[in-house]
Length: 480
Image 1 (cartoon, rainbow, N blue to C red):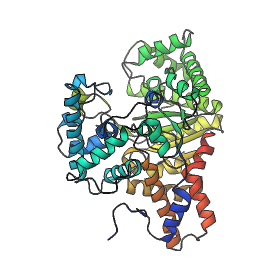
Image 2 (spheres, rainbow, N blue to C red):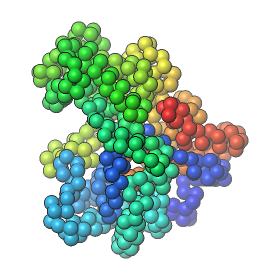
Image 3 (tube, one colour):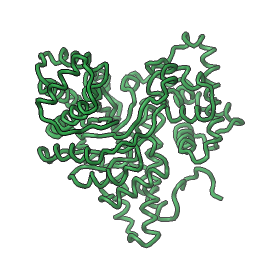
Image 4 (cartoon, helix red, strand yellow):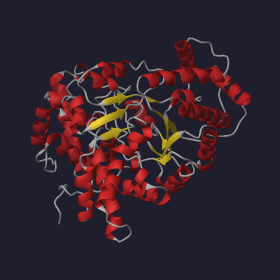
């Protein structure tokens, strides 16, 4: 019986251990997709206690706690509906807030004891070990000691957000930002000296694409006001979006991001799509067909602009969001009530990519699927286009089995040595051991090919390949 989470965790055999410890373990991190708040990185305030640092914005942990029957007050009771954290005063004073924080931490510890087979058990203990030096599994019996040890460290300057990023050897990260964002915090971070992590904005134009949203008319008006030019047509709006891309590029952005959650392409002529845009701008309802025509046309035009302006285009496909209306009424949106979508989109993504690459062959794209049933379809689609990657295992897939399968599918449908590696897709500053988790699984996968006699053992060749996947391939692909 092996010890839990030893130095050879997930590494089966000498080849896997060699690849990980000599070539993967100490590589830097380029986290090209996450949801960290740049304001918190700039302000670099203490994280508070372990409940604040570990639980405040980690929806994976919230979902597990709900599944374990924990009272919602101990899960999201400290969060306002807009996602911000309540003040101590709102929670009954500092003493009451501290007591409630320990209770929700303890509720998570109890939950964790039942999470056999859940990646949360691995991630949580990697977080405790890598950041805080806690080597024993956390249990209800040692919960108070773990709490006290971690809180003492979190009070130190090196455990504020910047220190946590530096501990994990993060070189660059890309946050997720609305096109109308002033990028105030990114500018302030860039202007400072002495912080070694490059913080880049990502261009996330959800409100531009989602013409069915009640917020769409006001958003387009705000875009027009910010641009300083009157929109007469859809082309005028797209031109303004291009100017916002330029602003993002000036401030270090190299990547865009889209969430596609239903049908997103029906071919349509410009005049028809312009009419749909005009309807949406004045708040008229759109049919399902209208919406797919609008999204498809806009997605293609944005894809062309990204290619011309040097952005990588990320497409995250297949989330079914905010399914529990009762919970949304209590705690707001984006609280972990999401799941897999199962719509058919292979022909749609093929048409979008074909339209982009036919005009802009230098385009660079990463495709992510949330439903693992789509792995083969998306991987083989990506291989149809130069500089188009089947992206890392995302969200509900970034567990051991999901990462292994994603790597396996990538390897058999493309060239594994060109893979761009892992990302966190996280709101938590403590999530970076997920890169280690991925690297261990990657090294074990490659070594398993060697152990079975399916690929020759050449330490120099395979070691260099591992290093590239862990860091350099992403740096090269994103051009940073």
